Structure formats: C-alpha cells, structure tokens
Image (cartoon, rainbow, N blue to C red; front, side, top):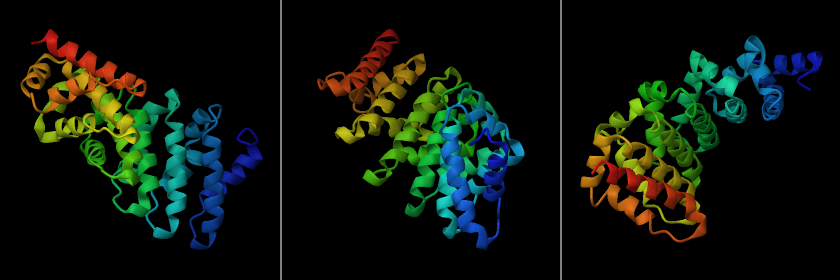
Length: 267
C-alpha cells in the first residue's frame, strides 16, 4: 500500500483531516498508517515524508480531546514503531514537535491515556539506545517523564514502568551520565534499587533492566565506592540477585555478577 502513490496520498490526506465530523475517517486513516509503520520496509520512507505521513502522525499524536484518544494512541504507536529504524532515531529526536508530543504523552497521568503513555515511553526507550543518551538525560522534560514512569506501581502500569526502566538502563550506559545519574537529587538510585528488589515473575523485565542499570552505573569508580558503602540498599539488591537460581533469571543474575565484579574492581 505504501508504494502505491495514489493510495498513500488518500490515506495521508484522510489522516490530516481536522474537523470533528471527519473524526471517524481520520481514525481509520491513522490506524492504516500505524499498520504501515510496522513494516520495516516502510519506516524510513514514512518518517521522511515530512509533509505527509510524518506531519499527520505528529499532529495526531498531539491531540488532546478526550474523543480523540484512539487516534492519539494509534499515532503514538506508529511513531514508536518508526523509532525501531536506526535511520529514524536521530531525526525524530531532533524534530522539536515530534519530541514534544512524545515527552508530553509519556507524562500522561489519566488512566484512560495509559496506552498513549506506554507507546510514548516505548518510543523514548527506542531512542535511548543509540547515541542520544547524553542529550536525552540532559533534557529536563524527557528525564522527568522517565523518572516518573520508573516509579509506577501496579499491574496496569507495569509495561509503562518497564519501558522507562529500559530507557534508564540505556542512559546509564553513557559514561558522561553515570556520575550525575547516581546523585540522589534525580531519584535514579531509589528507582533502580526498588526495581532490583522486585520478585514476582511478571516483574522480571523491570528487575533485569534495574540490574543492568546498576551494572552500568557501577562501572564508574566513584559510583562503585558509594554502592559499596550502601550495604542495605544498592549493594544488598545486587548481592541478592547473584543468588537467584531460576533459569528464567539468568540475565538478571549475570548483570548482578557483573555489577559485583565492578564493585570489587574499585573497592
């Protein structure tokens, strides 16, 4: 469909309709764009269609009317899908409007906006695994969105929390971020330690991300010394994870052992 110029133009035009009477048509068109965005062959072309698909998705992702929640979620889902393409990542973060709608949706508090928040956080997680880690950590709004979501509790918000922790793990891999991320003023320390202590099978992804983040942060000598002194907090969480025996916790245990090795290296 994307390669059919006539069909593509019709879908994009419908996705850009703004009248309330055209809402159903716009919703259908944005859903089609979402489906197209999941095809790896379409991702770069859709993003680089600046005045067409990109403009339609970014505008739809920024909708605030309650009646337009489905359109917003579909648009954010499409943008999240596009962020899996390496050639799109830097460009999307560099697009002021796209970055703004992602960060705004990642901070949504209304339970009715839960899916929109998950998609936005998933997009930020995807964007955080390339050379944007330092820039993203320094962006106050993006940082706040990730830290707020990293504190979420309860089954309904599990996926949002996991995406935020995945992004925090990625940001912690950047050397320039390590020292500042461990400073208590930002709250990363308490977030990752709390997640590292989770024990339910459904929380395994969160725990894995937290232990990976602790491993990344422990590779900075000053952080390692502070973690060593935090016997009842970070160090205890790492040591507890090294004792896990369930084969499903293999990655969690590996990250914990790697973190413990870093602590020993800088003791």
